[in-house]
Length: 167
Image (tube, rainbow, N blue to C red; front, side):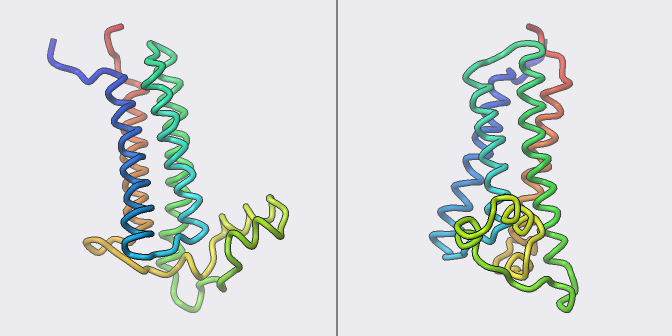
């Protein structure tokens, strides 16, 4: 039988992908380049951490059969939600300048002064701060790169969900 990646190794890889993504965002973009994360960026980080934690738990638990499929589906669902937020962010960045929403208050301010439902609604809608492209790599903005990472995670999770592995 040809060598196949064990489910545990795939989950470890997904957890490492999330960890590398967060280290890149926090230390390179935020600390080294001094870029402040907008509310949509922070929301995307929540989903990266979510898929990473699910993958880490799955790697530690090392389930078989349906358990592996459930973990992979949950991990993929978190990545899918993050991809939806990233796609919204990319859409905002490609709006014509006259259609970009006005800038709103900071996330800290909203969390301290508004009900959580209102804060969540405002954050997911995005604002003018989210439309700024402050850094790019090979012509791709940070949300576009993040969307690509989410899509990779979704594909890996989908593969992990449907593949047959000898138990």
